[in-house]
Image (cartoon, rainbow, N blue to C red; front, top):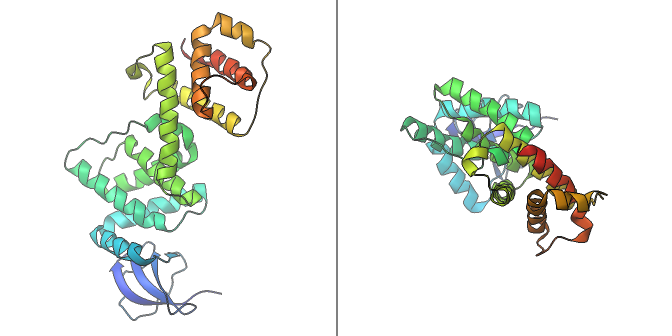
Length: 279
């Protein structure tokens, strides 16, 4: 059974405040391409089947309203189109993603149009940690660039991926950002231990391989997996720098000053990976 909505306020061609016939005492926001086009306050929406609804609370409502009023209609439409493609790939996203991502991209577009360069020091880490979200973010990026005639760089896709992960998991952007920062710390440990300059291993296929391997290592440890390795002692003797780097990373992950005996096997496997990786 469909829900009927009465428009209480038109924010833009792509967003309106409404009251539903099911819950006439609470105001919702509907977002979607063209949902507010040609609509006036007091009218019933004829078709809101493609729009997404969410209910802002208290202070959030006024903040979102201010944000929406600042966002250009064409930009909102481009973000909406991009998100529809992203959802075809990722599945359902929290409806607040429309507004939060549109606001973020609006600032990014303004920066690029002013000639500023967008940097993202966590590009490789975000790509490795949130591969699906990153791929979906590239779809959003392409839609925005094509629709608005701008060139947001791939670094911006990494920022978009954080928003998509938050919308996918129901968290805030702080959660995936913390994961990416932790991964960056792991990569710095490896580089320092092996004497590799960051400029050599950043933003490359090599860096992506390392980041992916570190994600796998963290996943093993978090899942309680403790792989044994009969060659652990030999690996430690023959590959002391790699084994030391692996041990340091694991100690950082489990927050212990020395490598637990139960994780020597994991350290040996990762040391062997590092030996091949740095060649």
